[in-house]
Length: 170
Image (cartoon, rainbow, N blue to C red):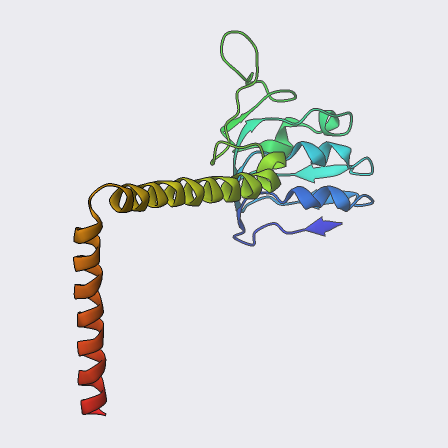
């Protein structure tokens, strides 16, 4: 039995809860839990009691033999929750469930989101590096060498002047 009701918990239901394979009762009621119910909770075959009522859950109910046996009262006061066994159907007019997570990702894909994030960061750095190298090449290859050498000499002069002032102060 895992009873965490009335604890003012917030955030998403951890997908790792499916690893509690022999839990028979899970009570997360009267909290501020948001997001979708993870599909992996359907794999808890020993789960006899589930209470997720009075939270802020959204999206479609997970599909599974065990999850389908729970009554509507297990999900009471989660107005944006839909799908069987609730009376509210999911999806648009075509009957296809629509994703409704807070971040636009299914909770099963959250682990992949960090990989995608780092790929985006590295692609950004790569593009920036290519652009900077191209600009430097253009400046050096085309007749901008005199401008570049003036700029570097002025910069060198400023750095040396500041270093000399710092030495006099110390």
